[in-house]
Image (tube, rainbow, N blue to C red; front, side):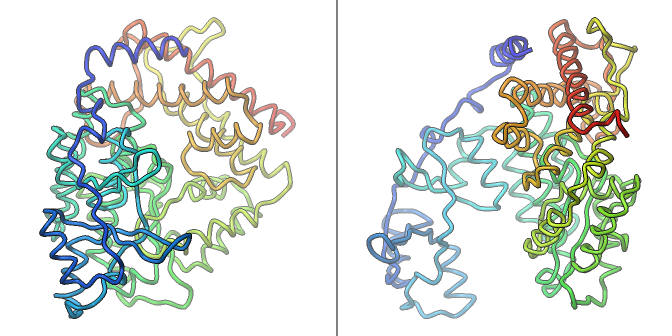
Length: 480
């Protein structure tokens, strides 16, 4: 399988890869590192920016081993002096952000774009051999790249109302198509789509929620969105954790509008009603703890589904510590009873994997999600839950399970490559069919694949089939 993946990668590189994906950060314009002390005044900082024609400075605070370095932007200065009324003689130390986000100068520019989009920032610190080399500004990155991913990110950030945000969201499918056509790997597409979707969800919530609700709640996404594996728009899987003792008078109206707006943006309603507009998924932290306790100690089919989807949850807006507390409680509450984990893992075997004894594909069309992706994802999730792991992404979980000795290197590599291969094949056929909106069809017709893709699908499904046998043995599923 590895050889076939390499062959496919070579084909993509020869036929589709452009300088867009090959470009390194060092090829873009990097602003030289200009330092000022934390005691520097706001007026002096503006003069330094003007002299160096930059929009940011590096600020040193402290000495020796206690020294820290932060970034001060022109926006930070403007907000402090004009909006907050700070004197121009104020030291810039308090206005500076000391949580540096950096990338190596030989990293890919596309990665820089993903990082900026994910964190909602306009610049990153560039390092070379561990030392700060300068600052990469978003405007310079966008000037170098020739795709439209930056347009979506900028429109999301600049959206002033729901109509603007809907327009930005509508451009994501076209972006996916462009990235795929340029030979961008499915893993990177998933990272970019995840980052953009989360910014859209966060921006929408910030538009609808009053400041006190933002401060006393945590908006979460679950399922493939929580794991960061979404490559097309899927059903809404979201929830809201409220701080205990807090009450918002208009909460029902706000959550209803949030769900309705996402439907308008192209994110379909969840058939299982796992959405913020249902009381089950918008409740105080104590309520989530009670639900988690019931999911663990009364594990019927619905409880195990809820437990699985919540285990994948990620915070997108509000106070992320509320989700951290809920997930910590989940891991603390887990039973040590083997029967519990056996029941949790059993859905891995719910659907037949459409591959025969001699690696022949079964059927004219195959459900790649039920037969391939779901058993791999849920099997890995079951092992991760058993080990009380905090990782969400399936690939990250596989690497952690490898480090813990659950997998050997061969098995870990095969599982990761199989998952990416199946995701890539599903995306390719959906785009070829003109389905660049929502991800509603998971069927693959083998006759629409070329020889290499068919062989790759056979290899992937064979690996999934063997993995299901591993899960059966590990969790003693034949005994229950």
